[in-house]
Length: 184
Image (cartoon, rainbow, N blue to C red; front, side, top):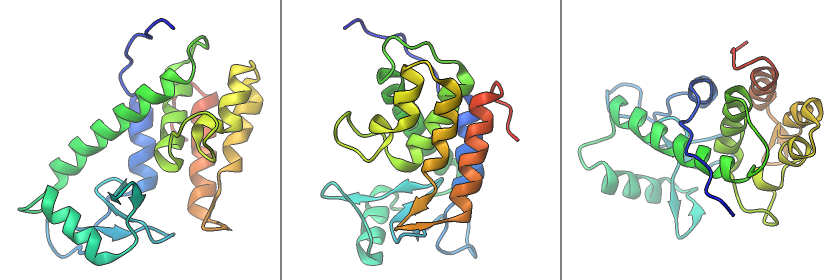
């Protein structure tokens, strides 16, 4: 398979991620950004960067702080969070682009899908549930742009329950996907 040209993560992806992840901080009384559990109990830092140990998301505070201190011994600050977001989002973007070897993507489509994949995981085809096996991807490859946009709405649940924040995020991603990258 030919190597696809590299694409920078679209600005709309970074804007969506910042808007909906928020800047995670377990202690807002200092400039240092500490780990914080998300709505399903996974510890994150910065702009929603999930902490992992042994290939699994960290769900206990002690492990989260141990990993955080090992990576940022003097504490994570806003500049660290911004750099981490750019690196994480670029890695997700590269993987998403690789899942569309023959499908041309606009920056708006790519940006919306990067935001979705950043949140739900990219995964590998056949390994779902994640972006690689999503209806968003399958429908876009089939040429059904409207169906792909509507499929963003399927990803509104976390921990078995619908979350208002995910409903709002999916609607914003869908709008960006359909509307040339402009955030609603």
